[in-house]
Image (cartoon, rainbow, N blue to C red; front, side, top):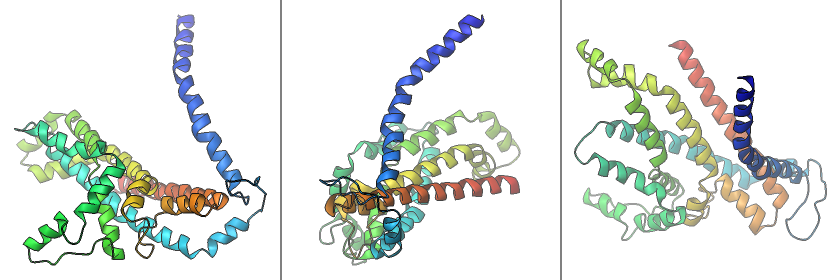
Length: 293
């Protein structure tokens, strides 16, 4: 029996080995190299990296563009993450119950997620067009003159948030599956006690889905901070007035437009630290909420 258990253990490690090798080669080694480059003057072109100590760190403090980039990224997270989570949870709970045409509605919610980022950004260049874009046309039906979306800093930020509200299919599927796993007898008992739909939502559904919601909030924070590069770059290229110069966009500019490979590596580390700090705050807030309950 001990031998069979040992063989199963070795078999499990054998299955995990390719993934472990991939993590080391594709994540751990590049991360260590990135840390090393951050303290050099490496341009990514011809010269070998030369160690410069904390020169790049001191440059961070005087970089006005970095301050604009931090402000844009934090504003984007504060607005986009709650809205994406609310949309995924709301649609997941709404379409969890069997209903006529439910399969088509669920498909429609998930479909934008498989649209490539570049295609989505190009589509929104048309949606947000101030002259013939459908969004301004819709506002015109209510007597509103519309906006020059991508020419004003505030509306440009809102436009990027609106664009990234559509690919929420993965979070939607997770909420949908989690809701269907909840025991229906809980809702039957609550109904017998006179608890209505909103009471069931507040007292049963949301508390039981709390671990899933925390996971989705953490995931969306990472995605919003680090994977908004392609759509934002195509849609606005960081403009106007650096309003959408998110950290990934600024890192790309530094590394590949200004040949500041080492400085871009340092900003990447800063991005990771900011992501970790926001996630830590979220987890502490959830832990405190659970204690208070």
